[in-house]
Length: 183
Image (cartoon, rainbow, N blue to C red; front, side, top):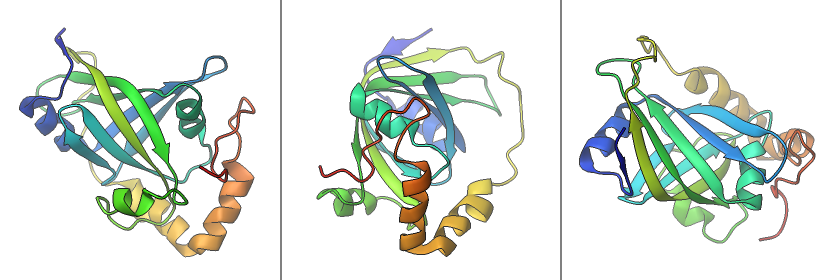
C-alpha cells in the first residue's frame, strides 16, 4: 500500500480514466454515506485539490456531512486493466448555486440539468491498495447522460428547486443539508 499527500502524474491519469468514483462522508453521529458518481463531473485542480460537481438525487447526505465535519473520501478503482484502488482523503467545502463563488466554480463543468453543488476537496492523504478483489467489468454507457441529466433538464430550474424542497432539505438522519440556507 502506497501513501502520500498529493496526486502525482500517475494518480491523475488513473483518476481521469475512470468513468466511476465513489464518495464517502459521515457526520459525527448517524449513518455513513457512500455514493457512486460519474459523468463529466470531476476536475483535478492541483496536487492537493479536486472539485466535483454533484447533481441532484433522491438524497443530499454528502452536503450535510461536509457541512457538519468537512470530512470526505473519494475512491477510484480499476474495473479494467491493471488492478488498483486509489483513495483520496481530505477536507471539503460545499458550494451551492446561490453562493457568490458558484459562477466561477461551475465554469469548469458542462451545463448539466440538476447541478446542485460543487465540492472543493483539499487532499491530506492519498492511499493505494492492490485492487485484486475488484471485478473486471466493461463500461458501456453512462446512465446519467441518458436518464438522470435529461430528467432534471426537463424539470427546469423551478421544478428542480421544488424537487430539492421535497427530497434534499434533510438527511435520512434528519440533519439539515443547507441547500436553501444563506451562506
